[in-house]
Image 1 (cartoon, rainbow, N blue to C red):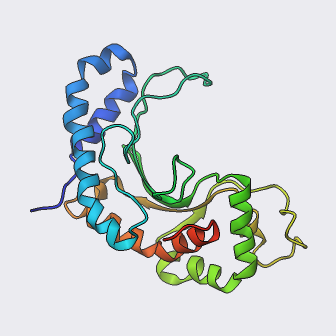
Image 2: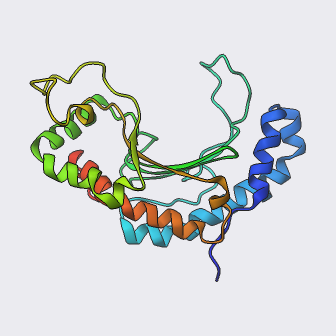
Image 3: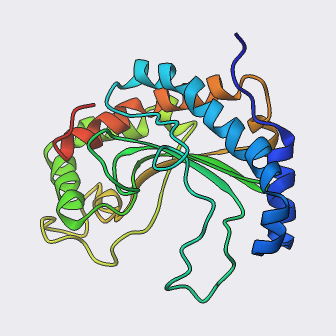
Length: 229
């Protein structure tokens, strides 16, 4: 059986949704969403599951239509000035089995017409977990450098996200050689894809290969927050 592929209509749908982001248009095009976005993404999750299990049995690919690895298309507008009801991108998160939300360790895939990328790590962890990672970096700096500076990783990923303005309290000096890593609030590594790559027949395998490249990074983070990887 061939691997699940993402159809070009997925991006077409989101281009049109960006122009017609209202409930009436979405209702008229709901069947398109189901056939061109939701269905292919759930197939992708199912196809990725065995590959992910081979990388880490603790990271889960959940193909349930609701509450699984695929994010809802509906925006939470309660606290936003932007009241448009729908997201204009698709997103998948393959999170740690112990995690309950987007802050859990995991892999992420973002699919938007002009922005396709994947992430690995922890986005905006609670302070106690961020401090646990910082302590782990201080205790094992060479392992951290190996996980984040080795060529196979550095050629594919870039550490991104927000950082503290000042050094954390457990760091004695601003001159620490890993000060920029220790100041991170987000411990995430990002790889950018060309949108055309996402439509290729081998994209699922390519995505899995990138996840394997980030495995040492993920292992370090999971161990730091006392989770198996």
